[in-house]
Length: 416
Image (cartoon, rainbow, N blue to C red):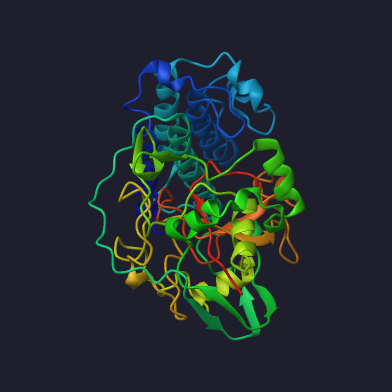
């Protein structure tokens, strides 16, 4: 990403962030206290605060734009539930803070920035991208209207769900290299992994496939579930994926504020790692490890995307919110990996069997809270969802959530 492109990307990210709240009434910004979301006004202010802290205060030595910013928006110091009781600025005040931060950040972004400036501005950019995606989760979770989308849905190309492709065993290399343009600390560094031969699903598990598990009373059959999965079932009494219901004409799924018929060839979405594992047990398969997922995506050779090095386009993957929802699996033949695996980037985040932890030789970057605090009790997800910005998705990006989370746009594929 060139310096000019970075400036454009920062403007683009801010425009996207604001688009997710522009249509909401002031009272809609005050969402219920839920463990998996943030207050919307707090989230917006936190985006400005993070960028200000790293690109202005840390990098440029600037004074805070708000005297109370640390007390209001520092996520490392403010407990989640306390964010609902803070004396936050109103909508106008929050937007003014966002405007002031972006203007100052762009002023400080010189024509020939240092490596530190490029890194910290990219960090702030991707941080905003991730919080923009979280705002979409929030809208879905509380049942607000669908956010705006820009394109008609792609034509289906015929699902090949259920098919598996063979990947030879061997010694492979995964992870980031110092020459990569931007790297999160948990991607450092490239290292060898030894894999036995395996087979991985050509496409993610579809609604039609998962319905068979639900209708076979798979949620009630303890033999399919891990100990943690059984504990989760006992706590929640779940009997089907989040946002599903039986309608007069069959199964339906809530998409934001609308109930729609369950599309058989779309990937199952809003399932957690326990549900994914239980389905795999039901069909006699398993989740892939993150190393297996990455090698299936790269073909075992160094590449940023399954198709090579060219950046994602609407023909490669369902990213950037372009199509406004999940799309049928197999619709993006141009995004196929060398092993013939599809839908690896975009559409739905994919659960893996791998606990989130450090790569060999890990050392935290200046933003120490990004990865290290979450090692151990989170699970690795790969690939990105339809809400993820195209500039973020790569074959090496490691996302991570607690395995019980199913409010995010998560799915999975099987492995054997």
